[in-house]
Length: 278
Image (cartoon, rainbow, N blue to C red; front, side, top):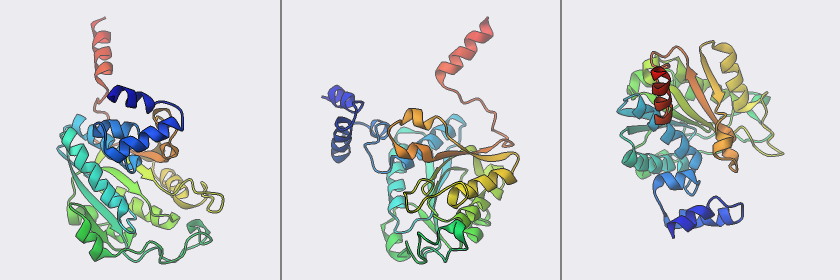
């Protein structure tokens, strides 16, 4: 039965879609299998969190932090809690989870770069008390993103950050969230897995490299020579039928003291050993 269902998951739609729904509804197979076949809530969150945990394990970090920027009603943060609880069962890494939000919903747009034709001030307002009562482990950091990011590492002393899930909608808010990267390299893994929620949109929204999150990423890269936020080009091959595969990025800190530590697969390690023996 297991083999049949797993084969279905590789069939073209609609069979693959039906199989995913069945696996998700009944929580069939392991967490890793459900994540691999996207038969789980917010697989993009799971991917970034799991890959961050695997990198941390390879580098012998016992604990890491994950951040969601822009929590709104809190469903994403609650889903992230689910994912990290599952990941901790199969990976020797513990998580700290933080959610950043103003609590007041979207601010007034600064200019065209914040899509004032698509978003209204006050959208996605948070009921802070209600959300905190539902969270089991995540901490909510309330305040203006540009300010809370500046002193976050000093105030909270988080374990190294390995994953950032960005759902801030605006160019200005996303730009301000990158203040987090001004902290010392010790507060990060050498590569941080990132997801940007607001870079695709629809035929009304129409995000572009000249507005929104994409513009913030472009400007960050232009302003930093040894720290870059780059597309994860492996994703469309790993998840060819998933739109979110195009929304996964990696923050690279080329000057991080552990950036060049070898973390390749066992197969690559074996290959390197064979080369040395020649």
